[in-house]
Length: 182
Length: 413
Image (cartoon, rainbow over all chains, first blue to last red; front, side, top):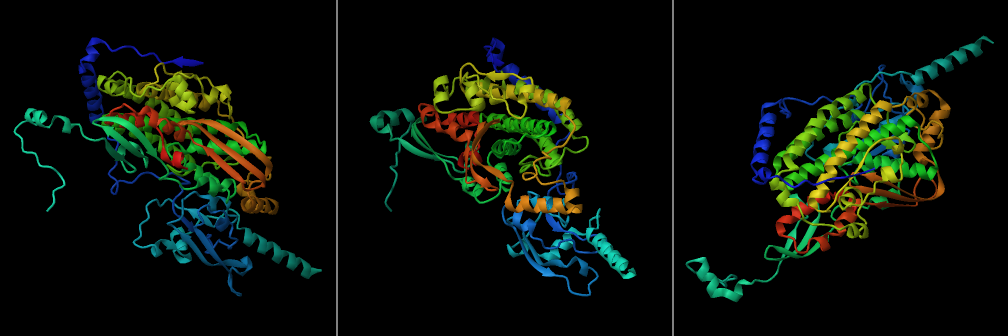
């Protein structure tokens, strides 16, 4: 259904500009005396909702394990190709040896990153996590290429729902113990 | 030192005129407006030939924001291109996301669940409100009314906070995925949208009071840059610009997608086709969008927010990826190879805030398009400039550009 927008000619009073000027001033004053809509930024900070897509970081699980297993899926999906991973292995005798792999280096170029959150979305380990940091400053290009150490520092620890590697290890040990009985 | 200008020492203007009679008819001046000029809304450059204050020739130079989006699309999977659609019409990224997702789903012949459709409609209409708010506010500023710009930006800010909550980003939303949306709506979000709409309607009336019958605004816009019905069609105008010229066309009603046929709304059309009509149409469209969003909130169905049965297109839910081997493999396959599409060609267009945004996709099967073409409404709107600008005054240029409400990200692609 179409709605034809009629244009009524201006009345004589309106043609004198005055009603509009006064009406405009009324609106302006109403807004001027109303609640303030601006925010004094560095002192006041906006509320950041959950799931905000800020700086991507790497996280530890509550046992202090680096969650990334360097599967390189985030590197693959990243639309601007901001991530570069050098895969590595966990040394023998390490507490988390059963996880087998961890990145030797993990590099995110924050100058390339577009904060789309796809890395977090596809990560099968919940190892990469977008923080609520929205303001990132650096004085050189090198400074804004974040390496593994910096990424873990920023990321901190996130709760883990599944502990899938520990569960897997426990199951394997149980199976082994079960075999021993026979 | 050789002088480049002739010094004239005359007592008064009349005497100067009398003496220099013929010489005062100077040459035509070529004026370069943009690519960095506040009134050209981005990086449009106009090469103007001026006869005094009147324009004799106008030549828009585009391409300053060309990033090769169409070529980029050929080098990545369908999902990876979603963030790039944000940057087409960057004033309504959600609407672009939705249009792109529907285009690819049309290729896959995939139907998304009703909840997903309703979420997408809310997204589209909120994007329309946000885009028109910017369009109207900046239009006001182009005609000399700074106040309207500040007021519409205040409202837009509230909308962006809602987008932020929904998608995680204020501006570059990247919200849709092929076969669904990136995440479900957060708890209580619909209520907050409803609250926004309630306080927004009086604000729209406020804007109406400031501009619609304001003689200063009317003097600047009425009967300026009249585009006839025939011209609007011949130059492939779409969206509000086409409707302002009196053509009754709206894809949401004529060729409904995403379930628009279930919503009740009116399509505003103008009578004259001048810059003022383009303003009126946008004002009314904002009101109609509010109506649509209200209806969508009322009928928001329960259910999944992505197509669960599309095993080769949409990644499985995260909890399953973390616990089950089969879903983990599926996740890897879809991410690395892309959502699997059949071979074929498809064209889909949607009614975006700026007009009809179309995606043509040529697929040879697999997860990457062979060719992707974007039909951008702003490009068509600008193409009439050489014709329409002739005879206008220099000071009308910002008004005409403001009335077209174009965005260069989409025009240059």
